[in-house]
Length: 207
Image (cartoon, rainbow, N blue to C red; front, side, top):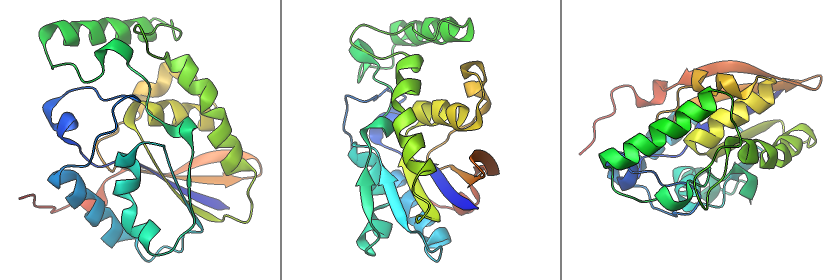
């Protein structure tokens, strides 16, 4: 069985402020995010990963930088990028913004997966571009153990895709910063081996 460790990136300052980043904002980890990344590394540094995958956005590769620095092969896949929130990316966490997002989430909950903000992507768009990363994971048998770092909303969509679940179930996957979903791939099928694991964050003290 192939093992795939899928994690969300560590915290950024915009995460802390409740501001949506999306695909168009290439922010750095903050102190908390770096501490989360270090905690994840300390917990999993002895796993013999064959490959590291990240999105094109630096908050993902900063999260797994120590694994990359250890000499592991690393590949960026743009399909793993976060959903593009268009005109709302980086906007203040105002009531107007919260209402806009509530309305968008309601559209998705009602089954309109093509709904999107101006200049942004729909969850269906993200679902389609994530098919390439899924193909990569499915067709490289020499990579037995893989570490993959991506983004919250995209991760929810990706897990639906890998598990053959409808997008209506994407809310079933919690995704705090650096949370782990360990997946297995065998006989052409993906399965969940560890669900929403944050054991590496137990006892983490920030500051």
